[in-house]
Length: 212
Image (cartoon, rainbow, N blue to C red; front, side, top):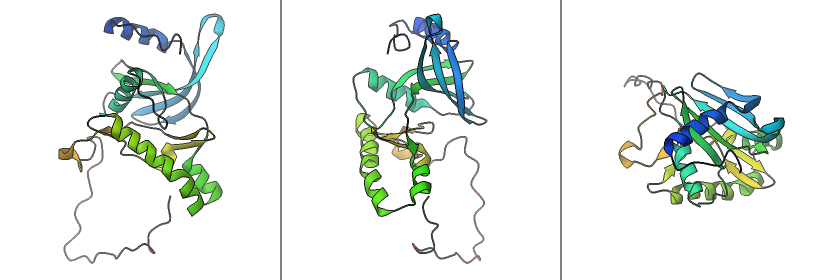
């Protein structure tokens, strides 16, 4: 991967190199911007204005406990682990209290777009779900304890000629049976319980809203 992938064994030197690299990125377009996270398509500008990329850069606010999975994935990849359904993570560091992640840009269409274009169908499900299950298995088996994505949805699945890629590991975390049902610290408080006199509405497969 060249300049961006070169990392020093000295943690301080590695951190300073990462900060220097931050200033060499040119933002091509913004994919997502929210109060706690910005996702951009960027190019790394080298000597003589030579551009390397594109890459995806995320900046996650230090005010929320998000993004720890990116560092775990990067460490596993640098140790030789190969993932077929996870983007390559090139750089993870902190800057001004925020987490900065630089990763592979994955071309293709989101599953959300494909569903709207082609309609949800058994054929589309049969084409996508085996690879999606393989991707989830990769995350579960590559880490001990398993890494749980926690946000698998059509907009976080990229389908391309090269296969299927799972993206957006912002709220992913390692499995902890004691926290299995615990919401993220930044999630809004749950609504108050219904009155005991209220009649619950029946739910069945026929009344559920079609996916997605």
